[in-house]
Image (tube, rainbow, N blue to C red; front, side):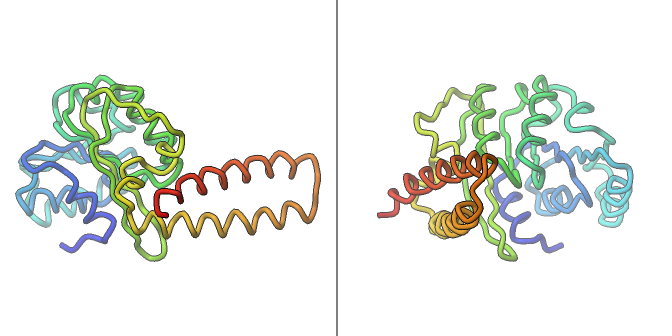
Length: 230
């Protein structure tokens, strides 16, 4: 089984030997990959929808991993007992949804030793919440696939806080490492927001005035982050 570039990066982030809870497993591709490559001794593949979970079960049985991958119908972490998994994996969901899943499953989260997260949006919300619940971000990476940028982070229990807002916005480790994809991402976002500025200034209203402030604030964060690459 060949994973997409995004899913491969996610799978490679998981610590070998850990029992994994794959939240929102979809077709269970990562779950199967982890077992097939002896990365995880066992996986609990969870999804809120019956359709994807049925397809996941079919794929798991096709590869003969039914004894090592358990499927569970679950809204987030509701059906995961504390201590059942060492790694909690949440990939491919929006940032706000990722935070909700972690918040509602806090008992299980606090008994795990690793979070591997790949939020699709509002990544700053996830970084903030990780710190709020007593986890420390140990690594971050970016991948680009089909023109889209993806952020993957790994966290462990521990106290950590960022002093600068741009570290929550864009990732302290990515900026300090001068990640080339981050520079590319920042430049793209800068171009997009500058185009938005031109459009907003062309038709000034009370509504666009508020949006102008938001865009200028975002551009200020980007300029601050770009200073890492000078």
